[in-house]
Amino acid sequence: MLETEARPAEPARPRLDDDGLSEEDRRAERHFDLAVLDPPYAYDGWPDVLAALDAEVAVLESDRPIEPGMGWSVARSRSYGTTVVTICRRSVADSQETAP
Image (cartoon, rainbow, N blue to C red):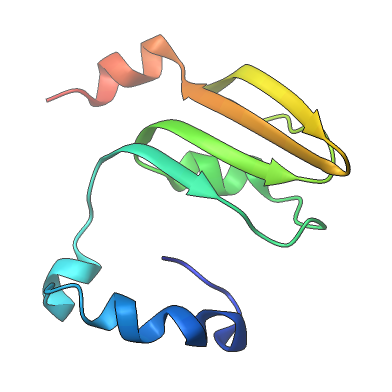
């Protein structure tokens, strides 16, 4: 879990701290199949965060359509009231370059 403000993360902290992972494991760089990103709706740094994200698929929540930037493509985008959920996939060429 990545939270930029401490207060909203506090209710989840006991469950996250009791996950059985060491501090070293939590800091280790990892590849993820799926990442779910739900920042404040005013967030507009999607290309930067996706460029740094090591995942194949990202589900993004915002108040507007999202342009993911280079290396990602929008697979699906749906509006639910004032919420826009966008599913992005890493571009095929990008995935092949980072594959082991």
